[in-house]
Length: 385
Image 1: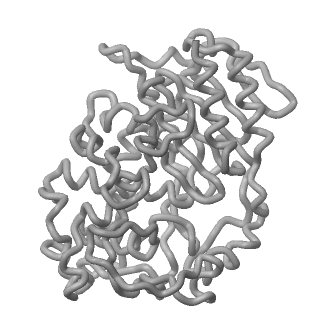
Image 2 (image 1 turned 30 degrees about the vertical axis):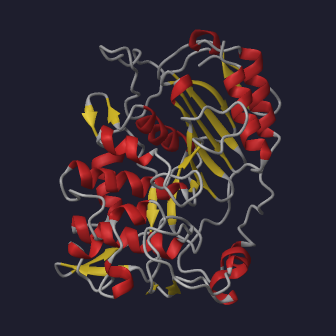
Image 3 (image 1 turned 180 degrees about the horizontal axis):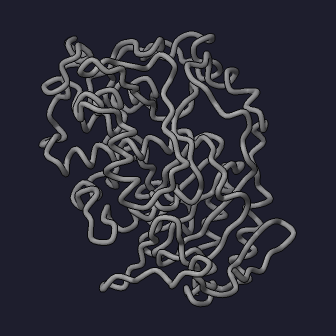
């Protein structure tokens, strides 16, 4: 593979090529390229309608904006509170991938490193819910979850009104305790610097709160709905279809297990706040983002219904610019970012940026966040000619 690299570790591809010793992967009749498992064809920026020098400058900018999180996760409990699951022994450095028209056009850092991705896992939960809609397991997003999930988690008057849509938009106001963490985030030991002051519960569907306890309840409800673990559903219905590698894991907490048909089955989290979560490479994150860029379809296979994708990328009434566990730019976009762009975001920072207007997916991991995030995305967009 011919590459041109800088001392920052930035790679801008000089020629288009497939895997070593292989023919280029096929392009569909519609002209859309879908990388097969174990391969990802590359294009020089000019072949993808991009200015190589500007793209290289953008990647160099990203390389210089690594997160200040310690490499050994030493501040994890201070930030988030008592751990419930494992985390890796270290995190890799910042890394990025730029995908245009489905092809890799730029790369920086260790993009094959498998690492925690924090709340990017929430967008994966939204995808599993989309599979449930596709298969008719959820026929109405506004149906109360407790009508199909009868494990006692929705038996109270407060929780009986919680719908699938409420969970997806983080407006459930679900009340209770799950895996040793209470919904209210009260208590410094349990929640670290994320501890919250007590407040009165609101009616489900009327108040937005970013809340991992409630998301973990949503994940457990999806397990009940499929009668199998969420990682198994994701692997069979999403990851295997889009050619993700075999290196990713969705790690449960040590205590988040339930019994199904006499078998001990793990329930997973929507992040890595208290350990566990999705451990994955930038390459696999890029495939996931590319699935959504293609409207939930992969090379002729419908993974998520198109109508569900549209709803998922529509902002909720009560929250910020937020859809179904995806961050949007519809109402609160930064300058130079299209209104229909959207992101999966995780602490650290870990980000998948999707811009349909530019047929573009950007994965940026372990960056400093803040205004630099939008600046990097703007720089990449500006490289498009």
